[in-house]
Length: 187
Figure 1: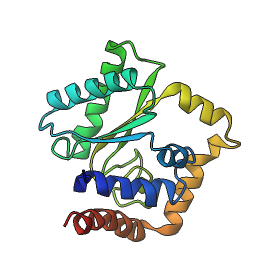
Figure 2: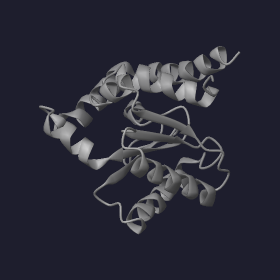
Figure 3: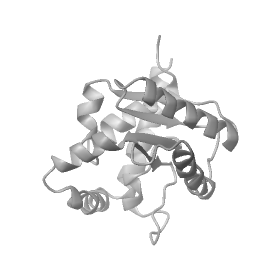
């Protein structure tokens, strides 16, 4: 069975941007081990997305061989402000399910913007993805990876410097290439 164009574009982004530029030094290992679950939800509203998120937490609980999940939601929370507000709801679900300290949710969005940055700032591309998504991480695995990495505190500054060096135009092109790659391979 072939991947959907949404998964293909997201996988290309993880390979080329996240791993390729080493934005997350822990990603390659799990990608190579095929322990990253890429799942697309057809949720069209926040309630359905919350249900999908709940189901993915349950799946992680039931299937320890899945290290991390990228829950891609191309039909809901297209506006970054709405997406950003939903992150509080996602964290509320983690608390409600009593999964604090077990899982955390990282955020990626096509229009991601860090506080105190301009919308077009290159550094925003550290968290810009082809589609809105929620990244579900196992905290124990994350802590183990962090403990074994020599300069974890330097990662954000290094990533910002790299994005600024590459520039927003280059990163826009790379992100666009991921989307174009998915439409070319879907034929």
